[in-house]
Image 1 (cartoon, rainbow over the protein chains, first blue to last red):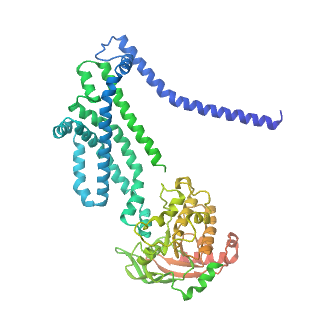
Image 2 (cartoon, rainbow over the protein chains, first blue to last red):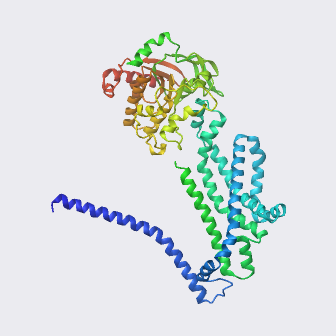
Image 3 (spheres, each protein chain N blue to C red):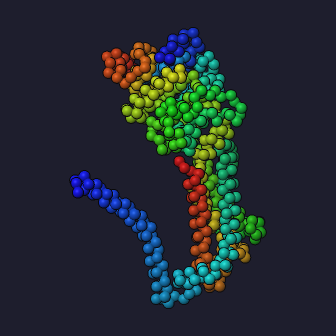
Length: 269
Length: 265
């Protein structure tokens, strides 16, 4: 082997080593949290068995998993209503927040008049206002959607107002030199530049709308994950309770991921 | 040499910009005091002066971003507002001010989209947006988003955007101030090329004496507190200019003279 060939082969093995190291890092990045979670679940399983904790106080993870599989049709029957309530509430709440934010940015008077009211509504605990809304809208779908919408509303309103105002003064001067109309400034500059702010609010809303729907179901519903949580609790079916809780969190994750995917497609800058 | 001939004919034409006893005040503060000035069509003026002398204010006055407190300002014989509505001038800011969600090409096309839906007749350059990007040396990068471009490239996109409505007057507010020396030299040469190819009138604000001398046919020197006209220095160096000219005795003499004026302010 000539000197050059030796050097080349050394470089090659170096590169191979680097690639292997990078791959190892990626594996470690995924394996660490997974292993930690698995260990915690194992501790839980062993702890419940070793101390003989009664099933109705804390079920073993294996019992929860079995329920998740065994009661799957019942779980799904309760999953879909909550899903619809959450998604509808998400759409209604965020749409209202965006439209009101647009009104606030265009009219100082509207902002002065309504922003304090928005703050006040936000300070009422959702658990306290939920019964009122059920009284107004009845025990059907509407009340849950309104509660889910209400919980989404405020973070989106605040972020959207900030986003619409986050236009650089120079971009506005450029618009002025181009003699752009108010609506052109809005559609071509303000609205696109608010999108990163909007999406950070939508990611919050994606998880909170599920909370809203479940709280709504607690106040009065026959079907839905919230109703199932109450039902399982009162009947001491704690494995079912835990399975329902996992499914609720799964719903939040699903919506969060959906919003994140859309964000990545839309906000490319 | 096209631009020189344009300039030679300027005597018979309407001046690109004309200020008569113009004042600008911000409350009690006088930013510009009694400036009278005529910029010939097709000329390249560098504007130089200490900070607070109203260099940027002067450009903003001409571009209808701020009104004069007293006096008259006209652009090609029209009020600044009429000139703005007719897109007679374009502005290049110190920061490129590109819309980050638009590609380089889409940013260049922005001025063509504004006003179109309202049926406003917009002057259009005989070069397409793509050709303008090529003119500023960005061929092949038209689909890049601003964050994928360097500072110098972004500023070149801004220049192409400024040219897309075929302006007759280009107002540039320290456009290369934030760039490194090499990039700045390169863009200076490119700007001179654009000037010679399009015959546009340029008002170029800068902090740098060599840049002012290198680019301008004339250097407009302003004084600070309050901002007023100090002196107009003719730069009799032949075009097309080259970087090597900077080492000539004439160039050094102009620089030294301007430095002297600047220090006297």
